[in-house]
View 1 (tube, rainbow, N blue to C red):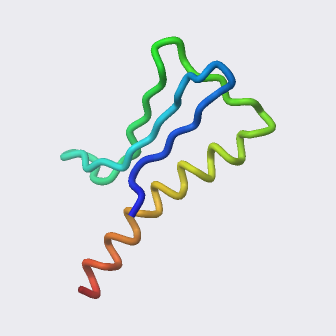
View 2 (tube, helix red, strand yellow):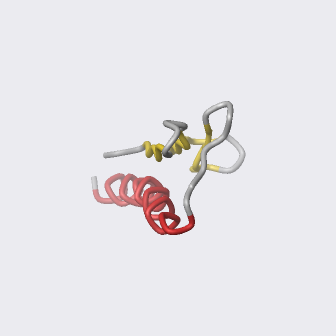
Length: 69
């Protein structure tokens, strides 16, 4: 299961996301960028959002596996 996602811009800056468990909120996506930030071109925004959703879907897959396991 892929619990991380990275988007790399033209300057090699990175926007990353990771599925983590927060004690107060449960499963959350933790986002981090390179120190100088990361440009996400508008025409690639759907790609970025799809990557975030793919990571988030692992939460649902884990819950389903636990329920049927």
